[in-house]
Length: 124
Image (spheres, rainbow, N blue to C red):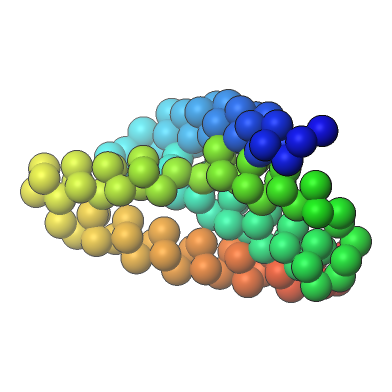
């Protein structure tokens, strides 16, 4: 299968998973803070960490699987554009503390998730 199709199929699956999971989280939470977007970004960051460790560091995941999972699935799953819009909406609506909290929470949680994913990927 061509790498372009791997990315396309992974992106489709990731986008569907993002839509479903972010919606579930947001409905459970019910507050203004975009926990659904934060949740998928942290989970996607963790998955990228595991995939890259297994592929590039351990050599146990083939290149096509890395392309499908990291670029396709996680590319469709994580939501930088949604994060940016939701942050700007919070700022626009006078919710500066929530907006800045979203930036800080997303950055810190996603960096920790990538690191933790790499640690676990090295162990697997």
